[in-house]
Length: 190
Image 1 (tube, one colour):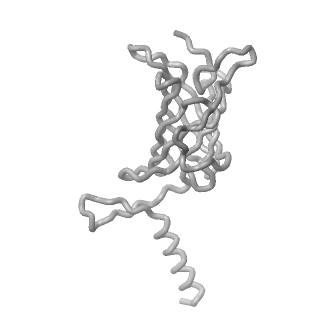
Image 2 (image 1 turned 180 degrees about the vertical axis):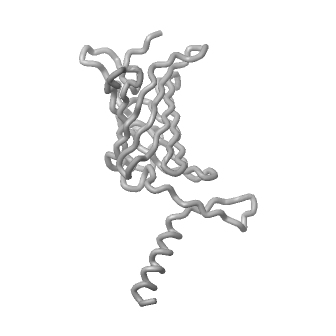
């Protein structure tokens, strides 16, 4: 093996080792190495946009686009966990969990009366797609606002760690001056 090949092998193995996370097990002396997902939600930029498209519409009408910042908070089993918050919609934040290229998110807005569930896949290092559901509490089965398709785009870098309290984001209004009550940007019907 040439010197070049030996150096390349050493460097490659060093990168491979650095690209693993150690997960403590029940036997503290036996850590388990779990490969970090690639791409993940923070390397290459932790600011993403999410755009909703109404899934019930025959033409999948585009709805709102919001900004989301992610912060890595740890490893749980085979999942990488993140906190997230919106840079564009007030009091919208939650938790994300990534396993491989699959991302599962949940969050709240409107003083925890409104809720979101998002399941998406990272398609490339800069884009992803999936499904977004939004609903409000009503004491019964919940008031579903919409089932939507979601498109994610990596958009840059957020300030990390996530500040506490969350940064102030002003309310959004329609052109007619009506308060936008949810991150999807649609009217809530009671």
